[in-house]
Length: 460
Image 1 (spheres, rainbow, N blue to C red):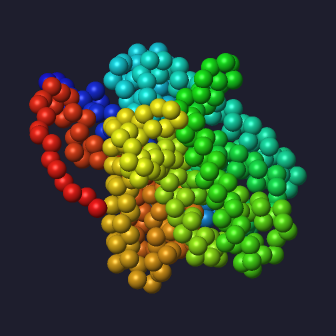
Image 2: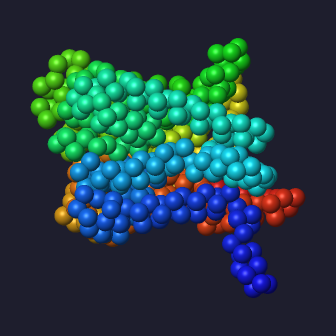
Image 3: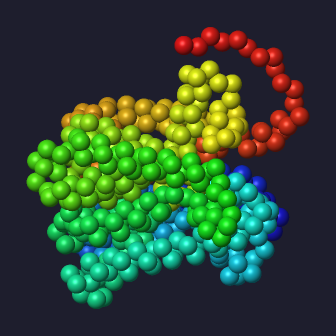
């Protein structure tokens, strides 16, 4: 009996840091999904699926990426598709969101440790009222997905019939809101939403789901309070400003780069060109759906898509990337240096030095991870161009899901590289770094210690 207790103490979740709990939670869900997707009952062929392909699909789903090695709509049957959409929903809203609701439903007491893990999982800046905040997240998310399904049903029900149309509408509403990028359009003989490239209704609905899903849960709550007479937080203003600049700027640049490209926009009507450019500007924000063939984009458009994928969505959202606020803080930091300002200011507020350090760390870790993994892919895949490999890698790291069509042709080693990138991109580079360096525990031990003298280092 004592031996059993000692073993249980080793795996006591209360001894884990928030980062370790989140890491293990996502890993456990992904491996459960992998096992289920491996089973013959999950696909249309009644065969065991390759473990690497099953793991790749499960990781891509739980990390809300959208990269695929087999067509979702044709390879997986109804059971397999339901497993994938459940993984997407859990991954998009965060597994701790559902764990919290399970605690409430079973009457389990939510401890301080649980609240700290929840806070870290949803990237909230406050601990007070965190459980109510989770309830609000779930309510808003399910409401938006339900609204998206209703709006999409006007397209899918007339085409597919009531039952199948409802299924398609709900499935894609969840996938798009969670910025996952998975779709079932292959079952209709189509590649993603390319058949709807000029469809204004589908473009607006899908882009609405992607954008709202990528704003961040704290933005929802703050906007609700603002409507009731409260104030907009600085974070909300930064997210809305940066998102607007990236969406509008991206749309205009894609129109400029692709206007005369016969493989993308050239043959579309004027409104079709605007729809396609706006969709292409929206989807790299970690969504992954597409209405034009990514392999046919001009080199400038590929580079622009790479940049947008690396930036990604906003903190505390269903999306990935280094986040809009990170790039905003870095831009202001560079600007303050160029203007010889002592502080980094934003909207009549001073940005704390700790925030600047975190932004720099996130950006640097992202560059290092992508650079190292890119080198691995270049060595493992000499047959593919560096542009295609970099596009694939940034799509994985930013949990986007866009592809030039080479994913299924990659070796198992390269698939594992992308799996690692998707996982790091979803859990968060800083979280992974904190786990490796044991920062969360050491920071508590170092409280009250003396500071070393400053060093003078020349830069530039």
